[in-house]
Image (cartoon, rainbow, N blue to C red; front, side, top):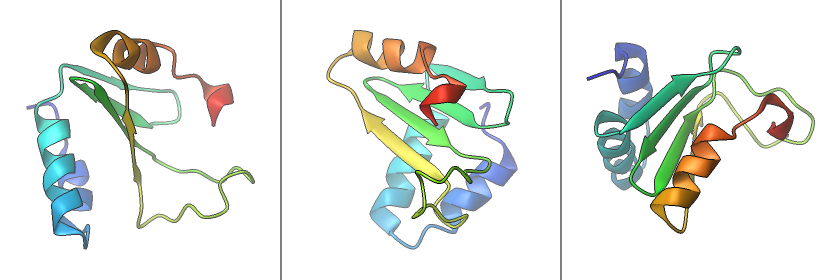
Length: 93
């Protein structure tokens, strides 16, 4: 398993049990994983991409808070998910 204890701890702190179970499943069963230069982590599991934000302070994300470090992208197909995963760029955030 490539998931860090820190990530698992963040998931365990999620108050929504259903979401916590989904995140746990997605990150522990991912088929692609990467970390960008800002230490944001990306997990692709099937047609879903999970982003674990290290830090988001951009003004166009005013509602982001450290207690919500995960974002889930549901893609329409495996190819779309690979494309989203491969093409995550700094300027998207």
